[in-house]
Every structure is written in structure tokens, then in C-alpha cells.
Image 1 (cartoon, rainbow, N blue to C red):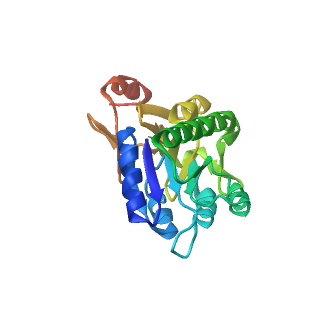
Image 2 (cartoon, rainbow, N blue to C red):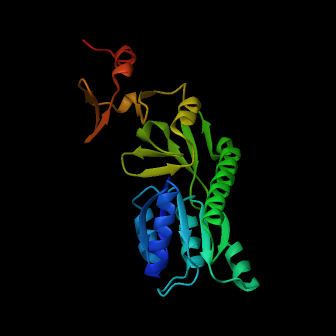
Image 3 (cartoon, rainbow, N blue to C red):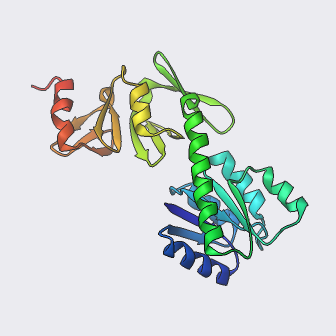
Length: 238
């Protein structure tokens, strides 16, 4: 599990990193300002955020998570010394996965993380069937504020990213909260082929291939040995 930390006290960060490492978690980054965290997750996959509320930067933890929620669906745990009702009510407004008060022990930390992830996955599973709708040659995916239409013939390929999938078109990347296998089931009547455990390509977009790769525009998508025969059967090769 990849965890990112938003905390501006260096000693607290080091202590938290050590605890998480002992528990077997991977801390991929830590930041003291909300803007830094936002920039990082826009380019990198993160499974969980641990966020302090009171920060020295322009954004506090609540304001930061409010922005993050508009970008993508990442579970977040507030870890804070703020035990007053007003702060708690403000924090609830951005729907954190949990709220952990300082000081905490290892048991509190680990159980809070485990419950937060488990609850997030349950909610995600319940919503997955409603997250993507296919109508003939169109797929609708959940965007920031509404469902967005993607024409299937504009999709070049899809790449698995844990519990998410990146849908790549010629001019944009969409991140959806469905696993690649679930999209494969929904699109099984279309021109899409699972060429690798982490990739599915639009056969109409294929420009060429070699023993190990499929070429789509300037992109090189790997093809597994086990998929090569089925791939060739889909094409007219002379």
C-alpha cells in the first residue's frame, strides 16, 4: 500500500514514517504544504493519505482534502491534535475515511488504517457497477462534477493502476474507479483486447507490433507471451 503524508512537523513525520514502515506500509512521499501534496498526487498513484489539519502553509488539511476530492477518489485519514467539536464538524464535511487524534499508539494507527481501507473498498465496490455505463459505441465515466462521454473509437488503450484504470485517448487521460478486468467484462463486445495483465488495447488503434510490444501512435504497449496467439488471431496478418 502506497501512503502519502501531509504534516509540517518534521519530528512527527519521521515518527509516523517509522511506525508505518514497521507495519509493512510504503510511504511514497511526505509534504508540509497542501499544494505540494496536490501536485504530487496529480502525477502519482497513492492508496491512502494521512493528513494533519493544522498546517503552516496557505491551505490547511481540510482545504487540501477538499481539492483532492475534486480530483480523484483517495481515502484520507485526518491525524490531528484538534479534539474540538467545531474542527471535527468541519473535517466531516470533506468525508475523510477516519479521524485519529494525537497522541496515538501503533494499535490505534494500524486499526484505523485497516478499517479506513476496508470501508473505502466496500463503498467503491458498491459504486463500481454505477460508475461506468456503456451505450452502444459510447462509455460514460464519472468525472469531477458529472458523467463524461467517451466515444469507444477514440480510446487507444487502457492501463491498470491498482483499483483504478487509466483510459487513454488521443488527447486525454481519464482515471476511473474500476479495475481493468471489470472494464474488460463491460466492453467484451467491442474491439478491445486484453494483451497484458495491465493493458487492454483498442484493436482499431493498433499501428503495428513486434514480439513483445504493440505500437499505438507513439506509445509502446507490452503484450504477454500468453496473449500473443489470441492477438494474432484477431488480426489479418499476411
